[in-house]
Image 1 (cartoon, rainbow, N blue to C red):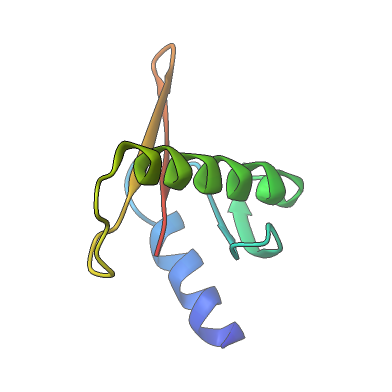
Image 2 (cartoon, helix red, strand yellow):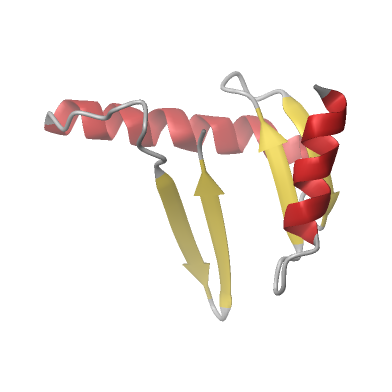
Length: 85
């Protein structure tokens, strides 16, 4: 599993315009980080994902297992994308 995560981290980090990548589990445990992404942010990011999921469930929207929710945060001319698998 570690090799797979490292391969994903490396592939994403090598993408144009990407400054950092962080992979965390649903409990906020950092599974890996590259670039400017801080491992200490994993818990915060997992919390954002959990809250976003709750908001969607409260709204009554059905989420299938094939959906990949994404949160986009814009700050100045920078963007942060949080994707969940």
